[in-house]
Image (tube, rainbow, N blue to C red):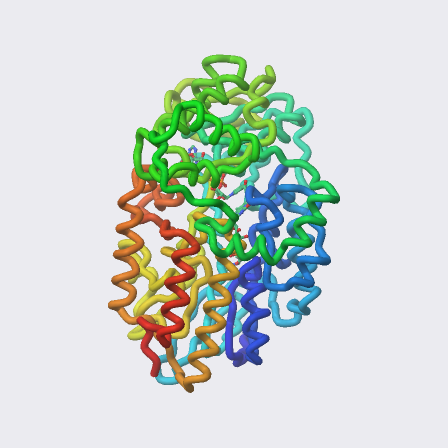
Length: 533
Ligand code: FAD
Ligand code: N01
């Protein structure tokens, strides 16, 4: 039966972004509803229950900073916390701030249509509800639409199939099974060592090898926990003022201004510390100059060769076709070492491409692999995927999909010209995916809440980004992207993992610090680049 209701703000998604957005708009005295497709809060951490799922940013920083009380009462026991504990934390936040009562679970937003005469959004769900709202905030996630590979026969397989992003709640026991894993990105790198411990045979189907650093995860000592709690305010300040949302000292030195030994020592520190952002930021030219970047690539290749005993397997695991850091670097806990086990096999799909999935397993151009289970660690239709799956129509009935048919266009990654009163958390051309996302999310959400408060204060029914401001932001973000090595690499960062997706760098590379300054400046200038009516 269809129903309708009216609120001030509809928020789509109840992950880290949606929950904090709800908290913020409630504090403005606004009525809000959150619509979430899953049955619980947590987003990424609700869906990704695959073995080994864990954050790759230290938990001290990969957490909310808005509540000093929350910071003091919650104890992160490990350097990099696992999925279960992060999900427990997000649930704690939902309870502590009494957020659940405004969240509708198991419900998907299917369309959002802007009513120009009423200057309000009409949001439709798959449970036949229509919710009217002045403001609409898309907190739908950058990695929330999983992707299967374009390979025939997926439905024919008679064994069990799993995508890492839709893992069964009760886990999977692969004991004694012949398992195939397709993909070698972060999800595969985390799950493979654990699946290898259970499976009788594990075959990894690799198309592009990943650059991996050892996570070096460990329990935090009582002293470390106490130190963090005593210094949280300073640590958070450094986090917010950094390029990537974790404290770091930027350098202006080229990789070639120092000796080989000094350079290696710096990379070694990042390697030992499980800190790929420190390596990416180690020298000013490593992400813009191929030769400088190659010094990191060869450092990691040497490490791979030193861990993986079979020289041919080691070479197959060595990335050569793209620059370090231009795909998300993976943190590993026993990934390379897993290939030293006799029952773990690596298939190089560049030499012997995937042909089809058959009833009994996987066929490549060279061989057929009989399997009991297949794990698809094949990634996501990232950043724009969740937005494009909703029929969003702005002024003049223009659809967002049409507007973005040649690539997404936003103002600050937060607003879209012609789609008034709509905001996106971690949108395209925002820095989020190149940072500690928890830090970016808080910045985006705070800014959106302030902007909504401003529009209300001004008595504006509508606030819309101007086409000129959007044009300038897209040009600025593209110019930075083009000056780096990122655009040379095929990955979800550039949309090139999805057939026919426009090739555009989906994040902003100017740094969280500079980006925040720009957003603050826009706000200080009465939301420069926005039109209020
Ligand atoms: P999400 O957590 O993706 O939540 C979006 C929610 O919106 C989902 O629950 C989804 O169901 C819902 N939704 C989407 N569309 C609709 C719709 N139409 N209707 C209703 N609901 C909808 N980032 C880091 O910085 N550090 C890390 O260590 C890190 N680890 C990660 C590990 C994994 C396995 C993955 C996949 C991502 C990781 N990320 C990490 C990125 C991570 O996605 C973000 O850090 C963060 O969790 C995103 O939160 P969010 O609320 O913006 O989006
Ligand atoms: O996905 P991915 P993911 N045939 O896109 C392969 C975050 N995250 O789920 O590179 C064969 O990285 C594909 O090969 P190729 C993090 O931001 C973080 O692993 O396209 N192979 C690739 O190897 C991350 O970047 C953590 O050649 C195919 C793999 O599948 C993002 O989420 C953990 C194929 C996909 O890798 C996504 O990670 C997990 C095909 N047809 C996720 N199609 C942390 O550690 C795809 N592949 C915090």
